[in-house]
Image (tube, rainbow, N blue to C red; front, side):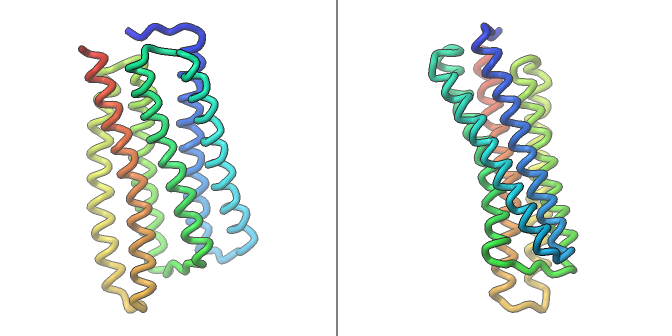
Length: 214
């Protein structure tokens, strides 16, 4: 069992707030990509800025949590694992922000015939995150349940990976300039990286589970 004093409880609360902030960044990215088909430049700029605002909020919560942890909460071994885990989750928000930059700064034009599938891919990556988020939350309360979510995360990441490969094949089958195909391929790979990063988090959670069972 973990010893939970006031500082430990505060850190767990901050950890869960950070998870929420990361998910809010993903949700903002999804709204931004979904709105691309509307071709409303003002709305797109607002949604693009919202992705950045939410990623900044996730960063702020992470820094506050790390500051509290460096003051001595938890045993050193678990403290290191938790710090590594929150940094791994933060990379998901960073990657979401990077995807919005890629689309906005490169002024990407996603063909109408591919837009729905790119949205679906993002939803698959988001679903992978939602499950690993459950694993992280259960890590403090129910190790068995956390372990089940870890396994489910791996299955969802594999599902997204298959979809990603098929989508890239479809991109290269289109009558598009090679440069545009390569640009779209890069976008699809970055979206897929969201699921990969979620799996990285699940790997870290699995290590925590194994250590706590010893």
